[in-house]
Length: 257
Image 1: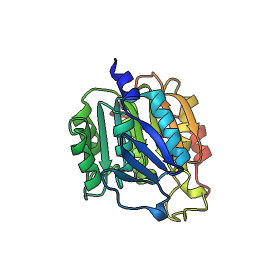
Image 2: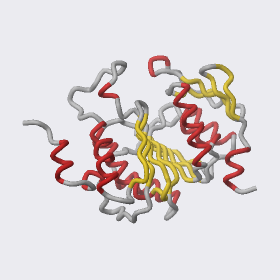
Image 3: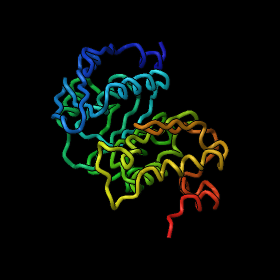
């Protein structure tokens, strides 16, 4: 059995209730932000709707990612889910908060995942040097299969992370930006002084036709933006997605005076 086959067949996944997913004996309870709770090692809070969790399961089954980076750990639910259902060779979690998540630490210890799952706290996704150092420490020159950004949801930090990590995806690898639409939804009060994360989605959209081979596919829904890496060579030291399209595109995004 190959490593990819093992990732897709060794963990039992089942829905125990409409909002409760069980993976390998660990429950993941999907909750809106207002009803979050503290995770324990066999019951994790997952701040996502059940249909989005199902979409992640389908994506993982199709992609079978072996090298994964998750930005934003919170109560550890997404990281624990990824570790169990994808069973990657390397999973790097990055969290701004310095406080560790005991439930995630316990799961990693109980399941013997310490050599494959590495969670770093107190790391700002807006710090390109720190982010690159953390990821490089565990992956070296290995290409990434999947990056999930569910961290600050702010334009500046999210753009830094995209510019830092997208060049290190393999062709066909996927970069996900969650909750990009927060400025356009009624359930979340928009931050009046913040430029919407939509701007990064526009950058990526215009880069797709302007820089052939950079982006193979782009899928946008209310919950996430899914960016599929193309096969074009990219200089990671100089990559900036906002420089990957023409002046006409920049004029389109210019703020009115």
